[in-house]
Amino acid sequence: LAKTTQPISMDSYEGQEVNITCSHNNIATNDYITWYQQFPSQGPRFIIQGYKTKVTNEVASLFIPADRKSSTLSLPRVSLSDTAVYYCLVGDDYGQNFVFGPGTRLSVLP
Amino acid sequence: ETGVTQSPTHLIKTRGQQVTLRCSSQSGHNTVSWYQQALGQGPQFIFQYYREEENGRGNFPPRFSGLQFPNYSSELNVNALELDDSALYLCASSLVGSGGVTDTQYFGPGTRLTVL
Image 1 (cartoon, one colour):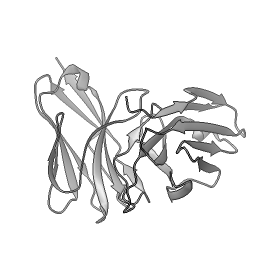
Image 2 (cartoon, chains in turn red, cyan; image 1 turned 30 degrees about the vertical axis):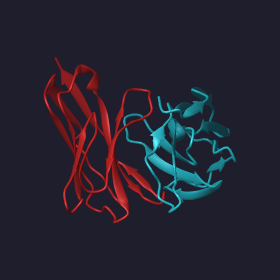
Image 3 (cartoon, one colour; image 1 turned 120 degrees about the vertical axis):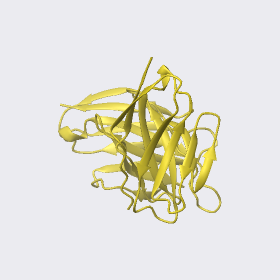
């Protein structure tokens, strides 16, 4: 059963690139990694998902090293509206179990 | 907007009562997972329903039970409510393909349950 850890909080300034790392030392072969953004009193919003190497979409990149024991979410040029809690999720391919990290509270300052 | 809806939005119950929460999955999805999120913590996996059966379960006692209906909507039932059950309850829908692999989960807005 994968256990995930993340930094509790991070501060950044508008326009900077932000990298948030999640550690998942016990990740299993069938597990994939997903990142979500959550605002207060709302459900988590999907950002990006990957299994290995690098994945990029229109809002973020996800870097996963070969040993898959960690993953890094990269947000280019953050804005004030990116202030939120970011969660990594290690999920089993076959729906047997899903483990969220404790979340990283990102504060973007002007 | 993900297309996943939950009802009710808020609910207040007293200790010992029973509660039913509802979730409608996104169009085209066939699987629903439920999560409990206590204040200031990450969501914790309760269980997943696929083909109207429980497909996987986290570390929650049997008083947490669920149902999935032929239209893929789902219910979460919690019996004998305890004060620690106060939380945001989230459902997420996804598509399980022919190989049994679960695709990305998309979350609803949640139901805030308060147990007094």
